[in-house]
Amino acid sequence: MDIRVGDILQMKKPHPCGSKQFLVLRIGMDFRLKCEGCGHEFMSPRHKIERYIRKVTRNDE
Image (cartoon, rainbow, N blue to C red; front, side, top):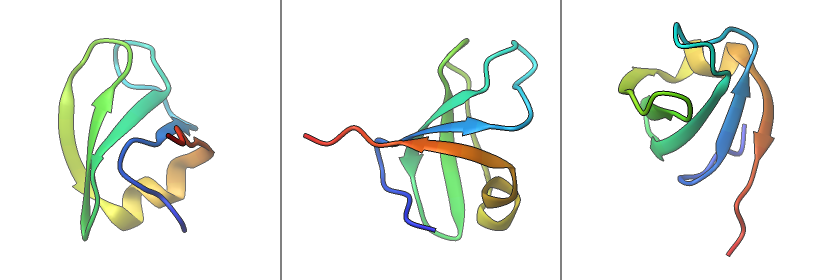
């Protein structure tokens, strides 16, 4: 899956704050994501995140 730093992921399951959109801050074996709703940052394993991605929005500069 082609995911880059700066992409916004729309997930199937929402964050506890209710937002389903997350900004990608770091990629590798783990993803570091930032919730677009409340600003909470967290790390999660790549295989877990890739399972729940519904849509990838790329911010081309």
